[in-house]
Length: 317
Ligand SMILES: [Zn+2]
Ligand SMILES: [Zn+2]
Image (cartoon, rainbow, N blue to C red; front, side, top):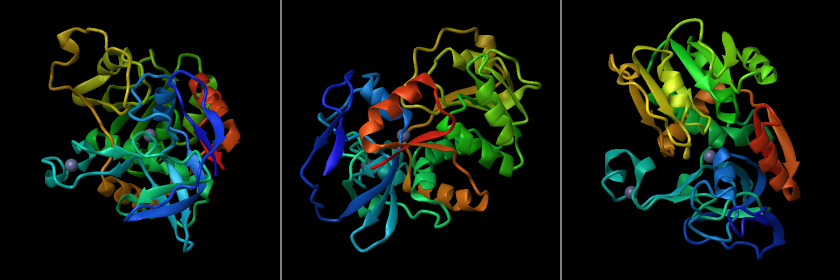
């Protein structure tokens, strides 16, 4: 099969031919219809987080077709032991022995992949492969972040990329007021956010029109944490939704005072996936995608790094 592999962190992905993967017990062999690009793929490529296996096929937002013609989604959580203290307390996202798609398990930037059937998710029929793929990480980890942000009315989204462009639609559907924060002077993305229902859009160093009840930070920039805290109402939460962030600068305790919270969100549970995909059909969440052929996966990562597109990059093998 044709595949794109990361052989060495910090170096470009390489297009290669690999033997077709063979499904093990409980695994499905999938023909990849589309695989969306996540910032985690870029963090692995750029060596901002450690790879645990090299070479590796990245890509963990996979829409694939089984040998008997069923369409399934393969998310980041690829396997858990089902037995550790986290798995036994409904927190499989924190499983001590979790294996992740596109890190421990070869992922979807390839013509074929294999996945544990128990971790595959059903997909809404009305979306094409390209439209559905972004739901599988940006959408559902974004949804987990939204849930953990609480029920507050006024929600800020910092970093208006793949996850935020979907979560904005969900939050507006839930009747919330959304404030979108982009890189300063990124008028194009601010306009994009307004078209998706944000009631205000501005730069990350601008003050929103009113204090917020919660903020989700999707951008990997630690300086946004005190920035977001300074815009929160008492009792509000800042949720950091990425796997990696630059260091958080020190800040005055006053910013945290009045029961404000800072927390992270890690990975997903299968229940997050099922809940979010059902909700995405109801909203309905519309994804904005830019497609790339398999051989252009490195370009897709470069364009993500540079912020050259709105929404999500999707690789179509
Ligand atoms: Zn991801
Ligand atoms: Zn476990």
